[in-house]
Image (cartoon, rainbow, N blue to C red; front, side):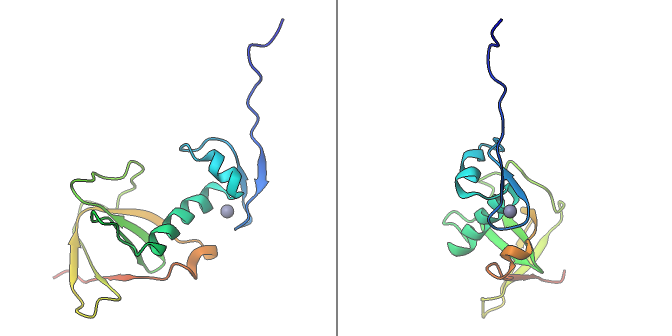
Length: 136
Ligand SMILES: [Zn+2]
């Protein structure tokens, strides 16, 4: 009797950017890309965040990458809706100041996605760009 289909076998490989192993298993639809780049899922995620930094930390419709104390956040607008993978920082108000803003304008948002601590392999290329402002 023939098997209807061969079981899927995922290939493991050494990540080019960190000590972890990568796989070509589909994870959020990016397995093929990770295999092509030879990076693990964590580094693939952080390469995306590095892309935000390289593109100026803000897209034209208002999303903004914030790096505060080595932790990465992403804000979004009402129109965009929240990111599908969201982890929360809570419903409270978040106040922040951009480090390169000479006016020191305090921005306020309730829409902030906590994406995680930036790994050492990316820290040099992703320096802080903001600080949290104290509540009024
Ligand atoms: Zn990696």
